[in-house]
Length: 78
Length: 364
Image (tube, rainbow over all chains, first blue to last red; front, side, top):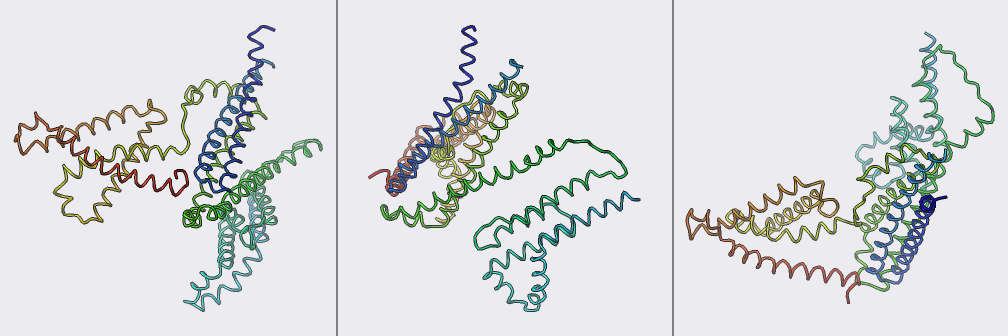
C-alpha cells in the first residue's frame, strides 16, 4: 500500500473523527449554556449557546463532507 | 363501463374512511350547529370562551370539506388539528391510521386504469421486509419532533428561574412574546439541523458515487466562506454606521424644507423607515457572506452614495458660489455636519447598548 493510499484511507476516518470531536464539544457548550442560564448569567449563557450552535453547524458540515467522500470512495472499491 | 364503477366504488370507500375517522366531530357539528344559528349573536362569545369547541367545529368543517371535494390537504389538516382536542396535545392514532388508509386508496384511485389484469409475483419474505419501511420515517420523525419539543420546553421553562438572580430581566423573560420568539427560533433552527442530518444519513445509507462526485465538484458548496450565525445583528450594526451620513444628507440637507413641516412623531417614523431600509439594503448586498455575488449591485449602490454626497455638498455651497458650486462643492462643511450628527447619534447608541448589556448582565 503506497503512502498516498494510506493517506486517503486515513482521511476516510479522519473527517468523521473531527466531526464527532467538534460535535461533542458543541454539546458540552450547549449544556453549559443551560447551566449558566440556571445561575442567571444570561449574557454568558447566550454567548456559550452561540458558540455551541456555530460548532454544531461546523460539525454537521464536516460530517456532510465525510459522507460525500465516503460515497465517492464506494466506486473505487466496487 | 366497469372501469367507472370501480372508480366510483373506490371514491365512495375513501369518503367513508374520512367519515369513519371523524364521525364523532361531524355528529357534534350537526347536533349543535342549528342551535348555534338560532342563538345568533351569542355564538361569537361562545367561540371566544370555549376553545376546544372551536377546534372541534374546525375539524368537523374540514372533514365535511374533505368528504365533499376529496381534498387530501383538508383531511391532513383536520388530522393535525385533532391532536389538540385533548387537554394536552396527544397523538390521534385512529385518525392517523385512517389517514394512511386513505392515502393508499387515493394512490390506487389515481393510478387505476381498469381492466388491465396485471399480476406481480412476490415472495412472502419480501413483503415482510417491506412492511416496516413506511413505519421508519413515521417513527423517526415522531421521535425527533418529541425531542425537539422537549428541548424547547426545557429552555423556555428555564426562563422562570432567571428573575430570582436577575430581577431586572423579569419583564423581558416573563412576557409571552419572548417565549414565542424563542420557540420559533428553536423550531427553525431544529428544522435546519434535522434537514442536514437527514441528508448525511441518506448519503451514508445509500451511497451514490455519481451524486457524490457531482456534489464534491461544486466549488460554491464546498468552498464555504464562514457565515456567522445571527448575521442580521451584524447588518443592524453596519446599517447603524451608514445611517448617520445618509440621514444627514437626505433629510438635513436635501429635503430640509420638507422635513420642517413634519411633527416629531413623523420625523421619528421617517428615521425609522430610513434605518430599516438601510438594513434591508445591507442584507441584499450581503457584504459579510459572499462579496462576489453582488458586485453589480455593490457598484450601483456605492455610485449612488457618492452622487448623494456630491449633490449635498453642491447644495451646501450654492448660497456662496451660485452655480459655480457645481465645480466647487463644499465637502468640508458636509463633513462637519455629518461629524456633528455622528457624535449625537453615537452617544445615543452607546447609552442604549450599555443599558441593554447591563440588563443582560454582561457588563457590571
